[in-house]
Amino acid sequence: IAAEIVTFYDQHYKRDEKGKIRFEPAQMLETMWDVVNPAPEIAGLNCCLSGLLELPARMTTLGHRAQWKRMLGELPPLPKTKVGETTVLANAEIIRGGTHNIENGHLYSVWPYRQLGVGIPGLQLAQDSYANRWHKGPPYQCWVNDTVFAAHCGLAKEATDHLAFRFVRSDGLRFPAMYSHGDWIPDLDNGGVCQSTIQGMLMQCVGRKIIILPAWPTGWNAEFKLHAPFNTIVECVVADGKVESLKVSPTSRKKDIEVVVPL
Image (tube, rainbow, N blue to C red; front, side, top):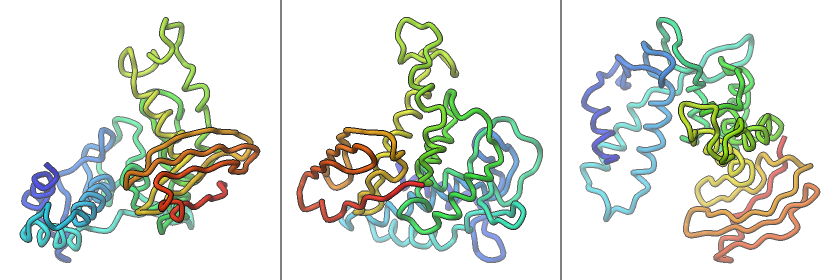
């Protein structure tokens, strides 16, 4: 499936004068309907192509690997803009017309595509882009995922904004986890954003590195058991801002643990 999707992008978009893919016609998620080089496409293809090239050779073909390497070199850079004197990520290189929704698509580069953020080069750019995101509306309803972005920027205070409220918001429904405020009932978006935020606050993985507490408030205690890549399970107890116990299975992966102090 992945190979066919990247082939679509390879065959159906022209190259510019620098040999870079020019994503036009294109839109930025549901929000901006007429753009050139939207950030989610560029970040997503960077993520997918890199992941495909990390597969064992036996699972790929020489032709596919040559295509994937070529396409990586043909991707345009993530679009950027200026807010005052600060450089931040942009939703797209060129934006025409108005907006039709409230998505901060430039932060898809931070999550889910993990091109910059905690444990990855570009953390300051990610944090500046979050602080200057174009839409700063209520981050506590439906699929609005600013809290997930904040967790992957290492911003504990911002990640916890209205998080408890989202977990308990049932608006009188018999079953609390159904969540009435969203696109439908039961609204799974609220719960999904909550869970993704909590997990990103507790643990993030970059390659073989397992980062513990990247956005966990020092005043919150926790006991968790989470799965990490390479068949790894991490069990941890945190109290008063300190790790009281840590169990990693297999034990050989304990050397890959890194505990960070969130902002």
